[in-house]
Length: 267
Image 1: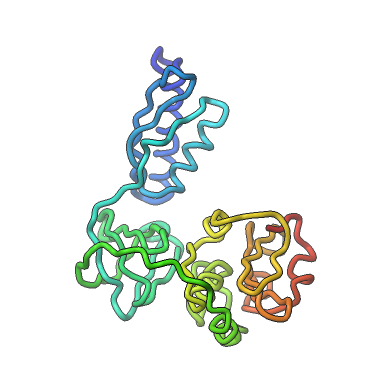
Image 2: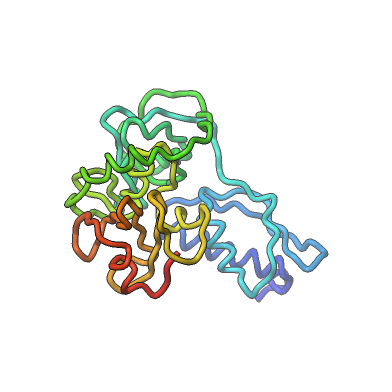
């Protein structure tokens, strides 16, 4: 260990370098440009930017027990370059040649263009998902404006969910020919007029509380051996939950009591 690494900021810098190397190996490209300085108050201050919020969470976990971090000056990479999603849609992958991250339809845009690497383009979708695409981008557009807050249209939700029953389960999918649990929740809440993050861990962060949701439109997250960690479903009328079940390979609807029966934890 060098003298610089003995200080808290030095140890944090070393942890950041490990996160950067791991992200580079996983995604083929990364942006974890952070500077660590000792703050004089026992905390290490970070300045700079990361490509996605998830990378900052990785840094926090890597520094757990190393130092208390002040991340107020850490931002998310932004370029201000936006493109429309073409009518045919596009697919985003976790790695330029890796597994599916999500699917975007024409109405899901625009996307922010973050980087280009090895013939692929890294974009951030309107729901915050960051991924690589080799699909053509639409025309350049102005930065989007956040929509006004709206109340859920529960009648539209009730009309929408039956059409998804028996749709095949597909990790990363958001369409009737293949959808995963969080993609289904996102699409159904979208039908009800609500925007929702794409992935279950981000959905859980919106406003979590322990216990079982009982009202139509409530997102219910469970941790069980039968499904993926932080598996989510959506409450619909009749005290039921509609979910894209990996263990049953399709979208199903069942009573809330059955959905949570094998869960170790519910939120």
